[in-house]
Structures are given as structure tokens and as C-alpha cells.
Length: 336
Image (tube, rainbow, N blue to C red; front, top):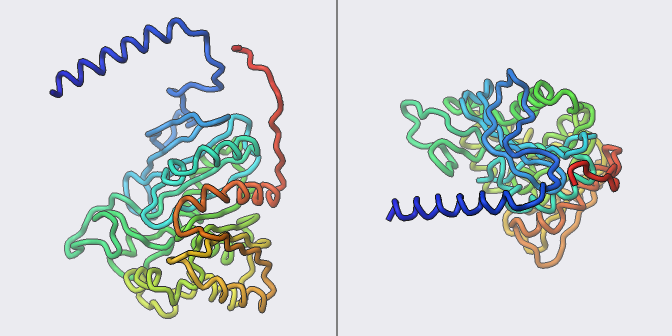
């Protein structure tokens, strides 16, 4: 059976090649086999996909702060030189290409129009070696993949690997500057996320308002220090969960006086069953003078459908705060 399938695939490939030779040259701004990486790059390109006026790349690299040899992240690079960069954090169980697969078609259309580069980290350190005594990672999706809520663990042995806060805030931006310094500008960066990634984006912006121009979230947990799912992670990875969790709780950060770089945009479905406490967050933001534009669209739940519905609004929100405008024009292609 395997040989029959192999022969059939070979015949299909032969017919496709014959068909391609009959076609006129396609208006294609790049080649799938190409790479934006430097000759001496420390990154390994593992995937490249053409989408609208740009390309979505997946890269793999050795991470010093996560202590893994094959950490992955994705970047969408518009054909026109990116004017700014938006980091998009995936939710629990999400990988660097999860949102691209679910809502990439719309995301990339808008991003290419806005000349906005998109960077997608993985949600977890991935591929670390299981040491003696580590039977399985707490909150593990796989034996080498955790759900760490973008924190730095302080409890051994996880503190060696679970350092997603440092990875997103420091190591990944350093890689972006080193590899894409011809267009990547650290002063024109914003952040958003979905679910766990949405809560993480808010935490990053509240604790580091000088780093990001704007912040938004879709279906984020907002009182992580008391919500069941985040609490499991805090208890697994923090030596002192009661105090350390406050640094990763949106509500507690605003309560302590932290301010975001600008108004916060949030969309959470009115049938949300995981990320809750929106009312509490609205109250504390109002009390502390934090501008919050929160929406609770009817009949949406905790899934990627809400992302696909409102992602364009979030991208345009960030483009406005980053002060970039659409540069697309009707330019003729020299190939056509």
C-alpha cells in the first residue's frame, strides 16, 4: 500500500510540473525557498508560507534563558518594509503558529496593508530534558511543554526552564533586533494576546509601559491571583505563590498603581466560561484612572471565533497607537 501511494504521489508531482510549464509567470513578490535571515544567523528557518502581501516564517533557535535547543517563534513580514511590530501571545496549549493557522488569513491581510510586522512566540519552553525526579511537568500538555502564564518560575527545578517572562521581554526582542535590525525598531513595539496570552500581554504592558506603545487582549484572565487555572500554575512554579502571583495579576497590578502605556482594549464574550472577573477589573481601572475600553460581544465564548471576529479591530487599534498608516498603493508588478 505504501509503495502504491508513493508512486501515485510521484505521478501527481510529475503532472503538476508539466502543467506549471504551460502557465505564464505568476506575480509573486518572493520565493518560497528564500529566507530573510542573515548568512551567519543563529536561527534555523523551518517553515515559510506566502499570505497576502507578505510571508509568515517559523524559526527555531537555542534559547539561553529557557535552556532548550529548539525554541520556536513565528514572524509575519509584509512585503513593504515594516513600520512597526506587534507581539501576539498565544493562549494555553497554543504554539507559535496556532493563531496563524486559525485566523492568519485575515490577520495577515490587515498587517500587510498596515506594514505591521507580527511576532508570535511559543506559549511555553518546549523540548527541555526531563531531569531525575521530574516525572511530568505540572500543567503539562505534553511531557516537555508546560502552561506557565508567561512567568519566571522561582521553584526548583522549573526555574531553569520556565522563564517565559524574560524570554518575551528580553531574549526574543534581542533576537529580533539582531536578525532584523534593518527594519525592527524597539521603540515602535506593541503587544496583545488571546486567553492566557491576553492576560500575559496586559501584565507585560502594565509592568513595562516604557517598552510598549499599546496593549490589547482578547478573552484574557484579569484576576489571575484568585482564578483557578492561573492559580494552579502559580502554585506549581512559584516558591511563594501568594506574593509572587500579584506580579502576574492584572487586577493586582492596577491596584498597586501600575499604568499601561495608553488605553487598554479588551474583547471578552458574554458567554465566557474561563476568563472572567471583567467587572472587577473595570472597577479597579476606574478607581485608579486607567483608561479601559472593554467590550462583551453577545454569544461569543472562549475560542478562536472571537479572535477571528475582532482581530482586525485590534490590529488597527495598535496601528493607530504606533502612528503608522496604510502605505499600500496600486503599483504595477514588473513580472506581469
